[in-house]
Image 1: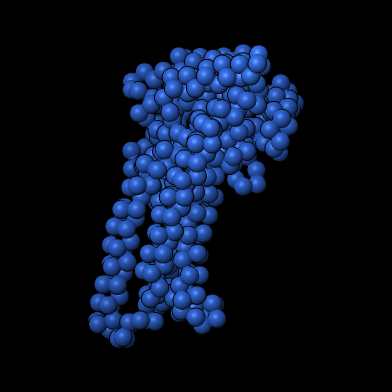
Image 2: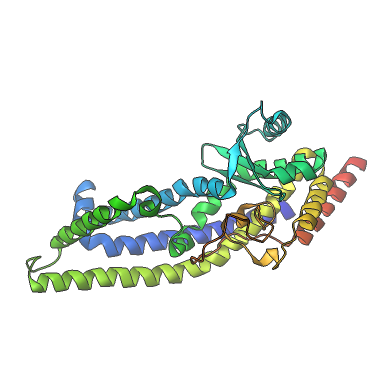
Length: 354
């Protein structure tokens, strides 16, 4: 019953987030319609209504695709993780292979982060996944605890949690400007050309609704006012809709952690091992300057425990920037996770003795 209730809460929370995402896409499509509506309508057979619907779908899919494209790569780069093989890490590879078979999923890629801080996370696309563990994690945990942690991460992959959380949090990511094609992909010398070309195309497209010559004073004023309205209304809408998504996504993230704890513990048949691992890791990597449970910055929100691979501080040579960031991932209190695992262990033990 508890499992069914948790699944229902996850489904309800995700449905609310997706409804807000769709509302944002519809509003953005309405703002862009004067510029590209006629073009899209022609693709939709001349129907303005179908064209508007197509524009909304393209807007939503495009934004989600951009975020999903960069999330995995950026997280692996931030963790400074390197891929490993059966030859370099035979024990780790054998464990992942065995547990993936038990979970009935494709064997994921494995990477190891060069950090003494014990932690792990899973990141994936709809087609593949990667489990990342730190050197510190491999050193500190017993065999049973390591299996339990790996099972936890494999459940995240099986449930597509990394994909779900990336897509569910794309509005706050837009507010934070986390994924920028121009910043990540283009050389500095090409950026002015791309910006100028985009501005020129935007200006030419405005001819579909501006009722004055484009290069006239009246045409330029109408263009500037229309652009300002799009930017202002779009920005306000993004801020208003992203605010509830932040809280909904954090709730969804906590709920999915409970599911990964529960199902990962069931996969190895030993909830006490995961509880023991959480206790050991929480004790070892207590942050030196602030409460880790109140600090979710980028990679930290993806990890088994919310201190990333730096223990809450900043690793030398890996100083965080001061850019604005809206964190949509959160962790349940470790004590509550451990208590639930102990209750699960008692329930499983009672089932065996019944």
